[in-house]
Image (cartoon, rainbow, N blue to C red; front, side, top):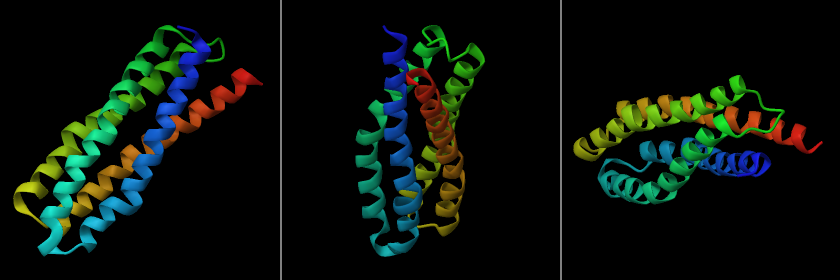
Length: 147
């Protein structure tokens, strides 16, 4: 695989996930607190069932592309930066599967809980920051490669 194509593919998938996480952080998760206890279960269930289809394949693809960039890199991207970009992907996976999903499980079983919703919003800032940082770094590298 061509190093430039791999780099640009990383940028595209990360920008998609970055946009998605900002939407979730600014609209979807705060909406959990606004929908009310009566409609919460249905609203939350709809979110969980549909977000999985939107985020799962791109996250797996991003992981594979980030792994690929550890081995195939343009000359402007050194190994340390490639490792950092990979670790940012790893951070989103760890937070997703070991923190955010358990919070969603609690909300699914217990129903509306303002404290858990706030915890979900708070921890999601870490994922938002990780994807935003990764996107910014990749955009800078892509710019350097093509200019």
